[in-house]
Length: 320
Image (cartoon, rainbow, N blue to C red; front, side):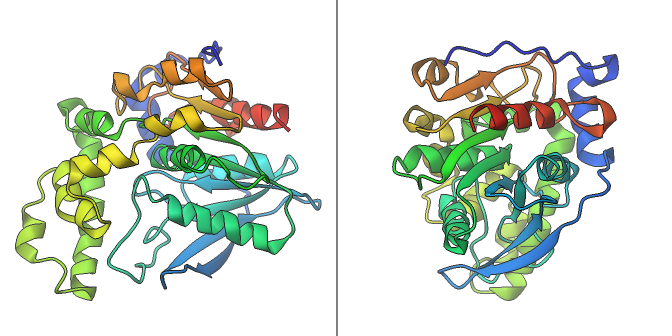
């Protein structure tokens, strides 16, 4: 589909990329959402924690929400999306990726941008419930890349999967990584790296033969982390091999259900390669919206409902 024009025009402060990103990431709060946790076992012996929010009336529609790098189901962007969906005839399954629910996962491996096998197991688990006839995928940042890759590499995805929404998506991972290594993003990259290394130190305690303290000390950047841990733990040659094989951009042409992608022009995490203009023009199922403002998952909205939460609900209703 052609590029969708956007009418997102926030107040002055939220036109600033870093203000909008930081406010929504650290200061926004969402109240009044009930979440019920369920732990499911994976086929490789690991587990995932799912946080469910239910519509007040019985429904056959469920949305699977997927957070971003070092996020979880308690983040405001997940809870805000869950709240508006559960108020509008959707049950919501907020997925905590491996090791992100507050508990270390069982295996040395963890989650990553291309680990679609975990999303597939969640979709299959929900199908086995035999309760929902419509499944929608809704991801942010890393979670958006994950779901787009899943849809593109599974041309015969279950018929119950009807559509998707992806917000602030690093469609080309090495391009996004390059942006995160720039000085403009130093605060974000330091925060991500610190959280990831803290988790890796726990992995070291649980799996002392898998990685050494000297290797952990070699991690100076996010790329170092992906070279030393992510790639080795998940079967990639190195970080660049991981980025190449896991980027959703190459899979977007093969997506066969309606997908809304919203990437702000002033998202400091995204380089030019992260905006799939050509792919959207050639695939009638891709609806690409590129607002001028929004930062990284930093969209504003009145009454504590962000622009993308309202926009995503409208889209999911339209394709129903």
